[in-house]
Length: 74
Image 1 (cartoon, one colour):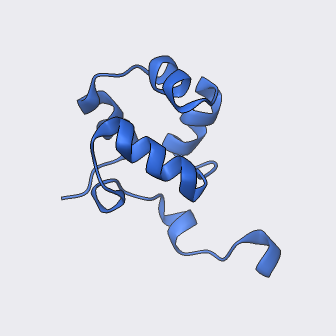
Image 2: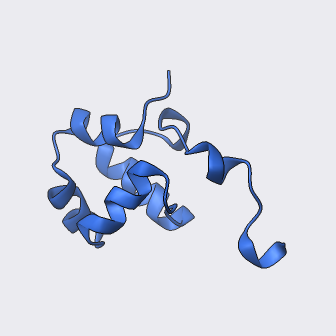
């Protein structure tokens, strides 16, 4: 069963600030990923999944990002 990015972070025992620091981004960026305002790059997804001990399939991708084309291809 897939869970949200926030739930994955909390299950791994990290605050937003702690996870952001380990991922090399600021807490606002991580918050934006968790709320679906922006999406991590594929490299960032792999780092996030590694940090949380999960696979990409275990963490829900916000619908607006999983169903849309990249900006440059529109």
